Image: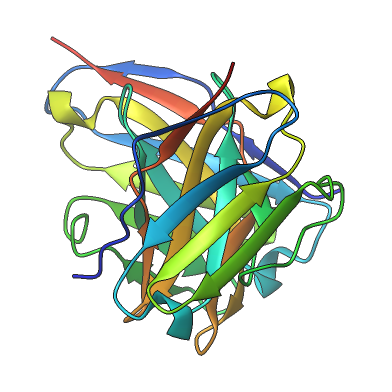
Length: 106
Length: 122
């Protein structure tokens, strides 16, 4: 079965750029999306189809996908961005989630 | 405004059956998939399956096939997730989410319910 691998944790200082990666075999040939889940809340879609932002998502969230790696980039990271982030792709008629990355803003 | 409202928290004993619900509003319920996602305590998101209420086409994750049943009643814009015999390991938060996309490009979930906490304990 298809697997997506994320680093368990990423740390960033306020105002700096955070990059969260998601790796999978030939992931660049598929669309990747990203969800943000704050503590005790439901997930929220922040990027879909590799790099598109849903309405209401701040411009500091951006995405890319090439080769075997999709990346979520948060520019000018704010304290409110501290959350778990999950990548997701579609493979063989199956939704696949990455294991999640805890973003700490310190 | 798109809304998915899930049924309330449940406390059940092992072996009992359960059906939880997810009611959609603010959009055409029959034109989007509804997916179900499990999140065990302190763990990540796991896709369980999804249903297209327009024609009841249903897909299951291999990990959950045969363990749960997904259904929908389009007349009341509600999707369901049910178990015939719960286990302690079914204790988790369950989310429904609206799925969009295509079979070719893939699906993603653009709106989520508030979650239903299911606790299974003797």
